[in-house]
Structure formats: structure tokens, C-alpha cells
Length: 278
Image (cartoon, rainbow, N blue to C red; front, side, top):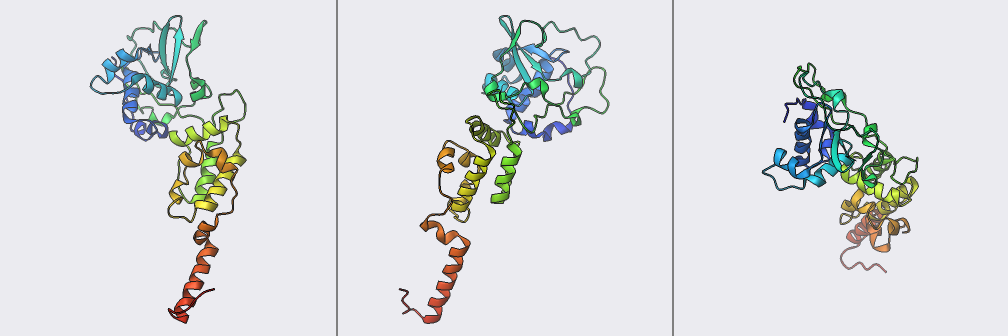
């Protein structure tokens, strides 16, 4: 393993924060295993022994998570599988005596990627990096690798050129509910992407949000369910076809219903306990 450098900004990277702590630690370990080009063999068992020997974890799934967030590319060359840390060399300053890479680059002839496009959308190599993690004064022996930051909009895996409006949908939900969901979070993007790839458009998301806010917004029992995992889950189509008018049982939780209740209570108090409302 080789010595690598890390800058404090690493710990505040929003895309890394969407991953599990052990996955973030694994990412750091990959820098140390990689050669001067940021490449290493894709051998989950060996990687676990080298980086996380004392932890009970699924390295293969963790590598998939890093690939989905565009930190690495898993690819194959012939019968062998390798990992490329995205734009690693741009942010590294390998020692002059560090051996040349013996692993073929992922863009060379006859190499096919093993990306799961249903999870990743566009290719990781297109992703920009955050230069905030680059060391101010890298030494000749070690450098820092800056994790990439995925695009705000990710193209769907069905080949359509239309991008997924994660931000617009999430901010619309926040505006309607007064909540603060993060459009960059792994869970929020997962549910939005699933429904988008089902063929729904931004107007459908907005209609579901409006419908459920009208029904649940004033209900203390259900208002907590105004969240991406519920609204954009498997019941999305059913919610989309619901009427926006709240049912009779929910009228007490609308502003008009609350005003009517206050008027009725004031009338009863004024007329006394024997008052009867027909």
C-alpha cells in the first residue's frame, strides 16, 4: 500500500456523506491500494483483507455504491476486472520512483465496463471533481485525491436525453411542506429516479405532492409521511390518481374546518352546557 494525503474538505463532501461510514473509509483505502494511475484489481476479497479486515461488511456492494456515486469505475479487460478511481491522477502527485501502472486503462481497445447503468446513469468519467480537497502544498511522495461531485441532473438509464430534475422536485416538496429534504441525498434521488424511469414527469411529482399535502398537511398523524420515501414510493400511481379534496374526516384539520370548530366551541360556551346543536 502507498501513502496518500487527505484534506479536511473530504469530511464535508455531500456525496460521500450519503454513503455509509465504512464505505467512506473503504474509499480512502482504495487510494492507498491504487497504483500511480489510480487503478487496482477488482478483487473484493483481497480488498477487504487489505483495508477492512476486522469489519463485517460487503465489499462488493460498497464498491457498487462508490461507483453509483461516481467515485470509481469498475471495468473489465479480457477475463480480468479492475477499478479506476475517477480522475485520480489529476489530484495526485505520485513519487517519481513509483512504478508505472501495469493495468490497462478503461478507455483502451477491447475493454468493456461493468457499470450498472440502471444505477449510475451517465458514465462516471464525465463527473466533475471538487478541487476543495486538493492539498495546498502536495509533497513529492504523496498527493490528495478529490472525490467527484455528481451532476445536479443525471440522465436516465433508458437513453433519454431528458435529465432528471432532482433539485426542482425536492425543492417543490420542501416549499409545500416546510421541510428541508436534501436533493443530493442518496435516498431522495433513488426514489425520484425510480419513478422518473417509470415514465412520470415533473408535473406528476408536483400533483402527488399537492394532493397529499392537501390531505395530510394538517393532520398530525399523517403529516410526517410527507417525505420522498412515501410520496415517491410504490404507491406513486395511486396517489397520482387521488382527488385533491380532503375526505370528510380530514376537514377538521383544514384552516376552514378549524375556524368552524372554534366558532362552534365559542357558541357552546356562551349558551351553556344545555346547548344542543341541530
